[in-house]
Length: 224
Length: 398
Ligand SMILES: Nc1ncnc2c1ncn2[C@@H]1O[C@H](COP(=O)(O)OP(=O)(O)O)[C@@H](O)[C@H]1O
Ligand SMILES: [Mg+2]
Image (tube, rainbow over all chains, first blue to last red):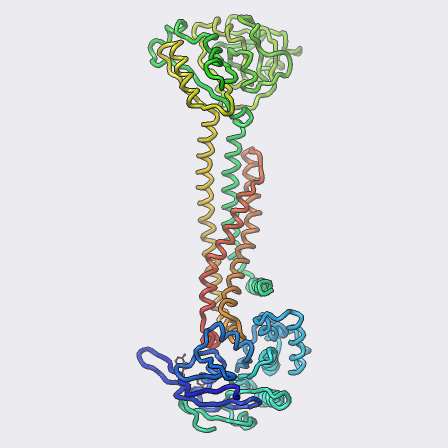
């Protein structure tokens, strides 16, 4: 069974009187241990697709099966729980909470899961060790470099042991060397732990590292 | 556990924008302080006004006997209430426990040729008991005194005499009009009481019969009665009116009952307290708007944070709780400080008005409840707004 099975997904935005179709019928299966790159020019609908896959947004038509269950019309409250349990997010500009320290940032998903404090603490430390950030647990995000912040963000995505990790242009704000380090981390997680990872990028070099690459153009998959 | 975390996070957030939090806090503080201070002041004033009644007891009924028309006031005497008539009031209703008629005499008083500041009252034995006169020395006027020229002096009169002579006041003489009276008793200081028209401290009390015989104008014009606590005051007033009208003609009675006066005063000061509380509430309202303003700004500033929280799995209710807890904490903190300040202001007011200060439970409780309510009320909308943000839009915002 595929982790994610998208069937004829469309997404249209209403802007004023006209309707704009960002996705025009996407069919996509994502298997366990996949490392998928979504590429395409700016405005081709990559982020829109990822937001729908990440249950941050509803699709307009079509069906979305997550682990065999149709989640395309799920109530918002259940979406939140599913996001919390099954998904991890990594963003281009890291999106760490500036007031919390590194450890607290990583613990955040567990907080919304009502995990006990000691257990969350322990899990977060473990994951931070894995991404090589265990020395920085009481630093605030603004005391870290971009690459370090992205590592913390990856730790936050990993801490809840999700089925799939979505990364929207994770190297977009980093120089090429640091970007490469981050991609290596993703590859390692995919290879060593069998993590399922979806990376949105417009960087050909990044996509070359992935097992599977799909190309979006004007809301359609043109190349798989 | 989740609530504790919300509280901890709220605390962090309030600390991280200190100046703004303090300003919002100040609004609530001033508001709560004014509610607490105003209501406390109202209650303290009420207490003070009622205190003098409570010392005398609440079962007193007084009435004055006045001429119905002005013209024949000088004819008098024949048409005046006699002492036996007045004392017989005790028999007309068994709820009347004690009767104390008294007469006021407008004669000058002198001691050894020096004028005294003191007015003359003709009283009976029971007068002391009813208006709570305690003697420092000697004895009070008694029935046995009849028409004798004996007198009991109030505390302030005694003080004046002390300045004029070295020896004890008892046994000395006071001149009232042209007559010489012997001092037989000295009263203790008497707490002033608006229920009794005369000030005992500045009084020279003589036997009531002596006072009537002294002046053709003196008459029993005031009577104070002590009633049974269960007495029906209206019925007794009716009985008295009937009785007096049988004895004398053309008189009008004016009643004052302690219970009625207390009820009226309580009602008035209750209205005053509510009114003061409302005035205080206006500033609390302004404080609440301040909190709402700060929270709305905070929601806009923290849109991205809200987006991140939603992305990692926060429910809308979590976001809502996060902001509501912050607003309530803000007003709770302001409220608690405000209560302290308000009580202090009440204390200072009592100090300057020479009132007795009592720490009432109601105003602080009221202040606390109202400030929390303000926090919930004015925090609700910003928190709701925060919780309704779209995760993608929130993430996209700067
Ligand atoms: N909320 C929105 N309202 C209207 N149009 C939108 C909205 N979000 C995205 N779009 C449009 O959808 C298209 C795809 O956007 P996006 O998925 O962000 O592209 P990208 O591939 O660059 O990530 C763009 O043309 C964008 O303008
Ligand atoms: Mg994009």
